[in-house]
Length: 377
Image (cartoon, rainbow, N blue to C red; front, top):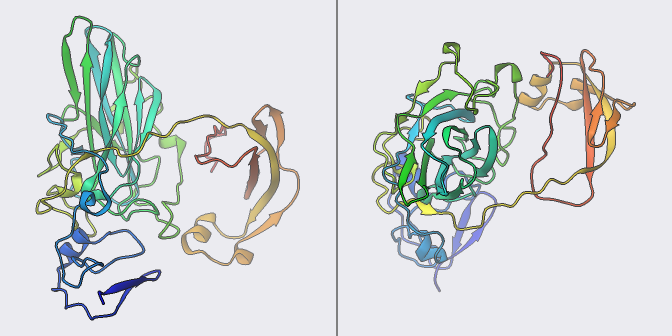
């Protein structure tokens, strides 16, 4: 009887014939070979369907074809010129581009680890990527046809590096790669790629190294608009010296054919990956890009004031008892000003708790704009 596995939340138990002992691995090898970041970690280099330890199979061999190999040369993996990146940090990339004419076609690929959001001339274009195994990272297709103009343009990209991973993305290394093939009337072509000519800046509007509330959640996000360089992703913006924009650095040991996990850079905490990941490769996205449509709010279904007895940060950071930290005051808080717009008067030491209801269940993200006086949290 071949060995089988019964999977629980955190372990894999084998029954039947006892498998032969697996050779002890180093910390680095463990994170390279295991599905790091998951709540379920199998024994490294052990195929669950066989008794004998085997080499870790590629995803194509294990799950069938998903994504095809991709070479983005001469684009390069770039990042901050830094020795480490704290988990849950946001980074801005910007690239001024001057075009001799309006392109008739502009297509390519983009990938930011762990998440990216692309802007062109101040307009949000797309975000991604879809979750993937970091050993076989998948770049997103890019189509900027009709988005670029003759003359000056500005490419702006926000990249969020999880570090620890979140509920859908394993741990990895930070990096950004971009390649756009531009074609003009008459057939002339050129490429715009990620390299040292891009500018990069730590986005201090989100606190670098912010904590996670739980291992299956992403970071506890807190945004400070006073520290956000409004207009940074537009052509007209001239970064002041006080913002500390730097020249991007090419990631040591990286390849445009491989994921950033296979580079020689350090990931600060786990020292995972490395140039010995010989079967790692960069691939095309295997699932369709997400379509977007704006679903309006049906109604405000609940409202209340939260009266804090302790600093709110202490409650979220340490999960202190609710009855010790705040009191809920259920009374009218806001009034509707117009369709999809509400207004209320901010009050010191009180937080407004609002629940909005949609007509249908949706997969997506809340989209909202807040206008408030400086210092409002």
